[in-house]
Length: 490
Image (tube, rainbow, N blue to C red; front, side):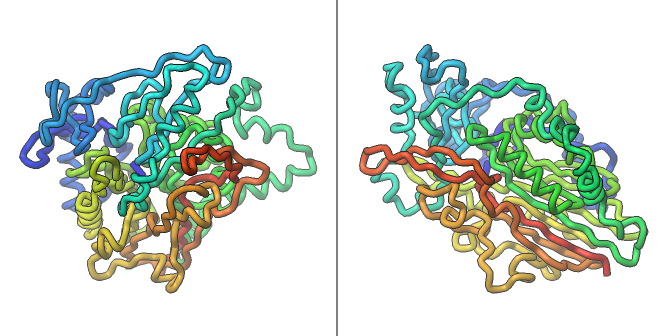
């Protein structure tokens, strides 16, 4: 679902503002169509002339209209004239219940995991309720304050909110400092007995690119994975990302599109064996610049990666593009994005960002339409009832209904995904593959990550009529399911 703040001045309702900080990840100039390449150069020039430094104090988000105000706006919002939120911090705790642990709170509107000192959500600006001053009841009080009240849940739009999964009140054990933990899954692979060496070799062979690419140009098979990995870091992050890595090793996609990657998730990936088979669109020195971002990874030969910011995003959303070298005269562009997220919050519950989302979808398709082979995949946050039909020109297809007609394709499902039990019912096909292919055809699409991680559970506090109930729930790799698309050359 969502984020943050930079330096490309753009008008919103006639008022200039600055988008969140981002960089153009371009190792080589991608071989796009003339129109796309021209826009890429224009954006790259603007970004190069802007400051790339980021400070959380440079701008502030209005709690009422979510407008990102410049630092010169000291007292009230430029758009709705709401007063600037008064910053406050949570007192540091010496209580044994939270000692040694960096406490974070989950935003009720967008579920982003915020630092304890943040007075408002770093993503959508929703104000955090202050905990009780009593050290002994601080954690329980904070959970109580963050839980939506009954009159809030009765609002007709609350069903669209991705309600947060509250952390368990019990203290989490400190992270292990053993060498195996530091090295992640890479450390354990060296301890496998000889009996498993053959299995290891087979697994490594599975991680090689689809053989048809370079060896048999007449039959080129490519598997592409799109997955929102969930930026919530206080819910078994390392185990979830290791499970995601297992899925990648099992399915061996040739190309991967990820959304909601945080710097911590990026670091976990860096420790993983499977990553060495991929070229990554986000260099290590850029991974810490933003709270979260989209990322692409490829086993296939690449001509280049790039990112183009959406002109209307107040959440720092962008279109990430990859120009893949498929050999011969064929061209293939794979793009991913995380379109503007619905973030309804008090007092009006109407911040659905449907117009922005539709405009971003049109902007993305317009940038890709001149490519003979283009795939647009990612977390579209799309709601057909609210946003209408996805704006696809003639020749484009939505892969799921095309290949699996009659199946709902819900990639966010609070009933099927038991990790989300206790949340308001929400069943949506948020993640999609949009394809326009002339030299390839779509062969299949499937959901992955639908099973719970064996032997892993977490505690969730749910308030029912002002009484807390503790739920013990399974853990899945993400709150979304992943989509795996297979295409082949004609």
